[in-house]
Image (cartoon, rainbow, N blue to C red; front, side, top):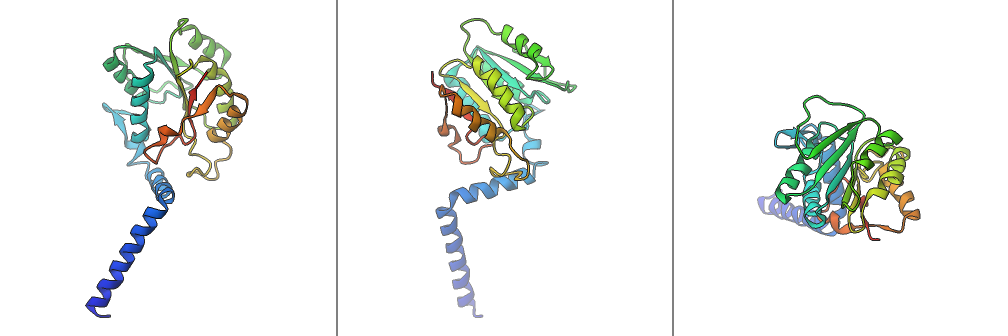
Length: 232
C-alpha cells in the first residue's frame, strides 16, 4: 500500500469515526458511562470533596449545586450517608448560601465522617418508622425541603423510601433518586429491578411529581430519569 493510499484510508476512517460520534451521541455517552463505571477505582471511587470520598459523578454534583442555589432548601434529607462526602459537599455549599442543613441516615456508621455544624447524622434504616419519625421531627413547619435517595438500590426498598420521603418534599423542590443507571441504563444489566423501576411505579400514582430532564443536560448522569420535581 502506497503512502498516499494509506493516508487516504486513514483519513476516511477518521471521517467515518467522527460521523459515527456525531450521529450517535447517545451511544457515545453510554459507552463512556460504562467505561467510567468499569474503572471505578480511578473514577467515582476516587472522587473527593475536600479530601472526603463522595462516590458521585462530578457532573451530577454540579447539578446538585445548581439545585441548591435555585431552591435554597432549609433542609436536605439524604438517605445513604456512606462516608459522608456528599453530606459534607451539600453543607459546604450551604455555608456559601448562608442557609440550610443536612439530615443524613445510613445503617452503617463509618468512622472518620466529616463533622460539620450543618450536618446531623442518623444511624438506622431509612425505612424504619422510628428513624423516619425522628427525621420528620427535625424539620420545622414551613421549612423548604429537598430529598435525595441513595441507600439500598433494590426496587422494593427504593419504593418504600419514595412513599415515605416524597411527603417531605415541598412544592417547587426536588426528590432525587440516585443510581437509576442500574439494570442496564446503561450499567449493571443483570442487577434486576432497581431505582429506575421504582421511579416508574411511583410516578404512575404521584402526579404531583414530574421528571425534570433538563437536569441531565451534560449527557451522562448516574440518575437518568431520577431528577424529580414536585410541581404541586
